[in-house]
Length: 443
Ligand code: 4AD
Ligand code: MG
Image (cartoon, rainbow, N blue to C red; front, side, top):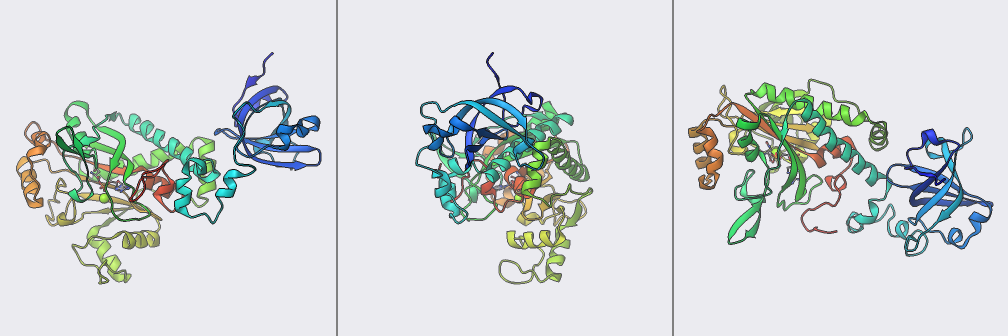
């Protein structure tokens, strides 16, 4: 009988039986008469032994890393103390390298081009190959689990998923970072955020979320800005600011729980970020005005090299310094109206500030931005005026305030930043498949 195909991480119930595996040569070494191959298939690794004649064929003698192979053999437990993934190895009795499966370029073609000293830009040019590395593949596999966990967590809370358009004619987060494009005979933009569209779904669908791409024409090169990123956004109906904060805390913790339930994901997070601990709830709450005082007390200056004062934007460097010193998740709330977006609701007690929140994480800083939304028509029109935005093209948004408005709020979470924190990666360029940022639109 034809032996069954098993994926490399599977086969725990197949010990002592003959199986068929497929994969690429991750590593190989010769020891006396034998050849040891570590095979990789994206589900795991398996050690394969070629013995006797099998180790002496032309294919075996010229075997290169990354070559694809089909191998048949018996799965056996390895002796105590011997190192092999999952404590087992495949004793091959047959293998084949089909036409075209040989990796080109001689031995170690990929590893020769990519070493520890290779420049990051070169690594990114070769991203299609470096994806095969252990760190990159672990990060992307954790990413898959986290994205899935968001769907699970939202479904548990009965949120409905929608798919807002990517081609739009309105901005959300300021004109400076809009990507424009010709759209038939009109002008259009790539969306900066799906928030305004999510708000229009509340009356008929209840609480909603989406996981879509957002686009920002960021002109600065930083570790946490991409031109195209994955934006997890949600909008909640009939809530107050405290409800929004509690929801945010619980969704983030639930997503981590769900993702880490899978032992492979738990192991990968441990490998990538050995110090990772589940965040403690409740997250620390800190008002913007308290943060300004904190920065002054700790002699952390603003972008002009002066002590921070009320009304200043807290720039990336200062924000990260503060978060790293405090070293736990922070809900930074109540930002001044002037430095925040037009749609944010003012605080009833202190109209200088808004009911807004950024969630800051050690190592990254801001990973979430959210707020309560202005729900009164007149107030919204005044906000457009204050910001100098022509409300005409926003008619579908402002109409919401005429036909049954409600107290509501929502947020956007940058998936790449969330992963940079979880997987302890220096930059968001390493937590997405093919990063797009100023000066890079390939591969
Ligand atoms: O703070 P932002 O700009 O907020 C909004 O877009 C809201 N309209 C979202 C909402 O309320 N539905 O962006 C939200 C998050 C940030 O906290 C950050 O994590 C991420 O999106 N983000 C970026 N990630 C990577 N590259 C960029 N250029 C990003 N800009 C924002
Ligand atoms: Mg923000």
